[in-house]
Figure 1 (spheres, each protein chain N blue to C red):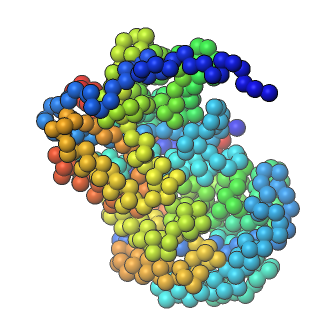
Figure 2: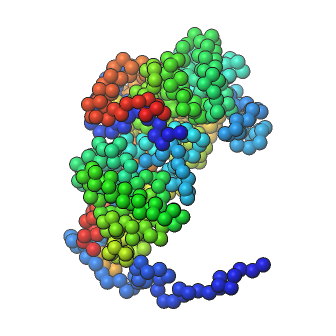
Figure 3: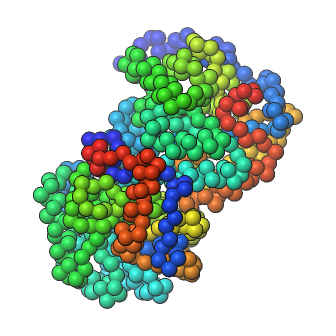
Length: 301
Length: 311
């Protein structure tokens, strides 16, 4: 018993990346960028608006936040729904109090159901992004041919139908197929929040023109730190502030950089976490940083 | 099977009509001691076994018995000290096993609501007739033992069928603790009756904080105080509800009870708090807030019609 001979052949073993979406470039070769106001750091706050169906397909896996107990799992359905009804309004209030603008990716299938929330997000001056068709519609390479293109076209159609033209795209569960970038670019999205390649925006090649990847921190993901790793809200807030302070120094060597992090409504919007959230947002406001939306940052880079 | 249970309409937290609790209070506070009985050797439910480990789960079973023999009594005295009447999430079977506990709660004028017969008998797979038999048993057994007509329901081990909420509404229950979508009550869309969702909590429930999240006692007290502070602040805009669901086998442990007392003293030390029971909140809400909520949801164009699991 052995593996086939070609298992030990390495056709892409060469300088640079093993894919052609973007070239290899170490931080030492990065040309410095400048943000419009001259701040050393751009901060992108991302508030994902997701709806977790009572009957997840589980294909190819259940997205974070999906139902866990046998049907009907009203426990997890309603605890997630709490975020879109209550928690997100606490986050909106805290953002306004701190004078900060954020980016809100929305599952396209929630645009009608959550219309009052969409209106509130827009009225408060934030940016809407696309977050796939539904939390449970995960993009991956095992989809039947044509399915993914249909989903993404449907996302664009649904946003069009409510008069919204988002530029930025976040994939459900941040999962992609090999074709996702081409398909979202084809539908007019020119910003993607799935890739976290660098600490600056990075241009990605697609079959339908270039697209900007804005790094969103996986290691600072609130659901991951507060739920999965059971850290306290103060520990979470302190890590975001530590990252922002660290990246605010060294602009003379590295140029302007960016930091993206998530505020998940059913997680960060819990009553007992709001004091820490406010403290963190106020701390960001006290630093010399430019807090901006995905569109603003992409425009400036 | 449905993707959205349609049990309530979407209702954004911003700009809601103002709720003022009795006496001008801004936060309605209730404590829900879960007084449960877990069977030593429960029958199998095809969807879930009674215990995570093979029965008998000696450690799990005996810790819960410690809660009934020792923990509840400790918690009752602590709640007496701060003038808090409990709203008991009761495994109805416990009335037969441990009547002394029931008598002690009745003597304190505490409220009882149903948490099923045993916390090791799940709703999954029940026929309508079986669910009705359970509900009728719960109502009659508590009535006989205490004279109280139960008005609230928390499904045993949080297990449901699609018809559970319609059935409890039909049996004239006033509130369900199984819906966690809000910090204010809201009408539930049932075929008949007048049922509301009562804010209970998983976030500050000791099973989650001590069990699932492994918090230290001091951390739990801190979470309770922070949770309270935020809901009290928002209650000035429109009255909020804070519930602390408890399990004596966890919270009354000798290394934890002092931390809980610290939080309870803090909360009850605020004059804006209505220290009450779930049935009293539900009664007030039915009479003073129900119609206002329905009107507001309608005015905003958010009433989608239909009833739970029947869009």
